[in-house]
Amino acid sequence: MIDRDGLNATDSLGRPTRFEHGAIRFEVRAADRGCSARVGRLTTPHGVVETPAFMPVGTQATVKGLMPDQLRSVGSTMLLANTYHLALRPGEAIIEELGGLHRFMAWDRPILTDSGGFQVFSLAEKAKLSESGVVFRSHLDGRRLELTPESAVRIQERLGADVAMCLDHCPALPASKETIAEATARTIRWARRCREAHTRSDQALFGITQGGPHADLRAECAQALVEIGFPGYAVGGVSVGEGPEEIRRALEGAVHPLPWNQPRYLMGVGRPEDLLDAVAAGIDLFDCVWPTRNGRNATCMTARGQVRLRNARHARDPRPIEEGCDCPACRAFSRAYLRHLFIAGEMLGPILASLHNLAFLHRLTRDMRRAISEGRYVQFQRDRLAALGSES
Image (cartoon, rainbow, N blue to C red; front, top):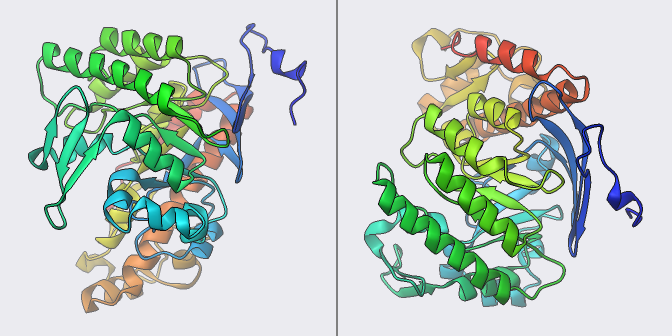
């Protein structure tokens, strides 16, 4: 446990480095003087997460095609699941009855649940938005599901995740600044309602900043959320139609007002180049379907860029996906064999490629932590970005 005196610790710049609130503790253990990158340790009821860290997405209480032991073997420490999808099937009451989400999916490490706010964007044609909340028509059978700030929190409390998220309004881009400002103001009002509704002491509730690519709206939202008071904060509404430069502007506005000694989470981002930039801006946690979805579609990540395993050039290639990688795919199999699996429609191909992509991102974040601790993150970022794009 962190002692009370330790909670007042500061770094060489006078910034507080430790935070404790109910279910979680967070400590900034190292920071790079050349940027805002930092190494942290997030302690939850189900274990410790060293940050920066990537969270594989298990939308429906499973990371598609992968067993929990496989996830642990490649370095996964925290998973994400989705409130909207689990509320529809099998329902939060069943999961609660069977011991909560950790027991239900046989994952004994930390879990974060999204609130369903992203589905306001992704399922917009099936959703009706009002100040009260969002009414969905199920994409499965058309039945009605209403998510309000209060019900989204209640569902996540019953699921039992270590970290729950506020319901937010994620607008589709491109959109006018006026439209984005309205969604941002609603996100703040909903965050206040979520905070008031949250009662579970062994679960942390994070606020979510919105504001699109507008740094001023992002900053206003972040400042308002800090005033409400949350143990952690997320940057939402990215990867919904904007380009890399717009993401950078969003991060600049959203991150600066956030407390230095609390965790920061960039939602829905998983490309290596985006992680490299976001860590430099001070982000600690990431999630995205990109690595596993690409793996299922025969595309693998390497330090030199993407390897498309279906390409004919790999038909006789004896090399692993990436030299030096210790994932199950690279330890035992050639590119030629993996290509054969995909061409033949064998399920082992997507499993191995997904494991490789997750192992790659976990190794990338480990290397980030080392570079930050050694005070060389800026050069590390520059070198890694320069190498990307040469593979095919």
